[in-house]
Length: 150
Ligand code: AMP
Image (cartoon, rainbow, N blue to C red; front, top):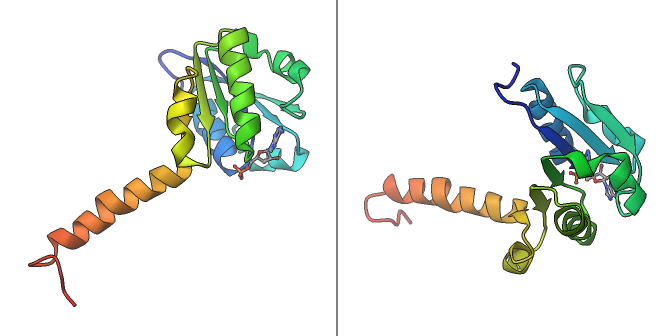
C-alpha cells in the first residue's frame, strides 16, 4: 500500500531485522536502500521489495556515500555488530546531518550513553524482556487469585 507521505530510508544490515523492516517499509511505499556485507543477506528481501541493494561493508566511509545516506531522512542501522552500528550512526548523525538515526544495540546498559549522542536506540533484548514482563508476567498475576499458585 503506498504511503501517504513517503520517506527515503537507508537500512544498514539486511539480516533478520533489517530485511523485515526493508520489506515492510518498501511495501508501504517508502524509498528504501539496504546495505549488507554479505550478498546472501539479500535473500531475505521479498519479491515485492522495490528498493536498492548495496553490497558492502558499512564500516567503510565510502559505503555511506554509495548508499546516499546523506540524502536520507532516516537511517536504520541493524547489523549484529554494536560498535559498527554506533560508529555508522554517529557519522550519519553528526557529519552527514541525517535527521533521524536509529541504531540497534545489544547491551541495554549502554542505551543512555548512545542516546546522549543524538541516536535513537533500539535494544532487542530490552524489548523482548519488557514484552515478557508486561504482558506475560502481568497476565499470569491477573489470572491467579493471590499472585501465587504453587
Ligand atoms: P541479523 O542478526 O540476522 O539481524 O543480521 C545482521 C546482518 O548484519 C547480517 O546480514 C550481516 O551480514 C550484517 N552485517 C554485519 N556486519 C556488517 C557490516 N560491517 N557491514 C554490513 N553488514 C553487516
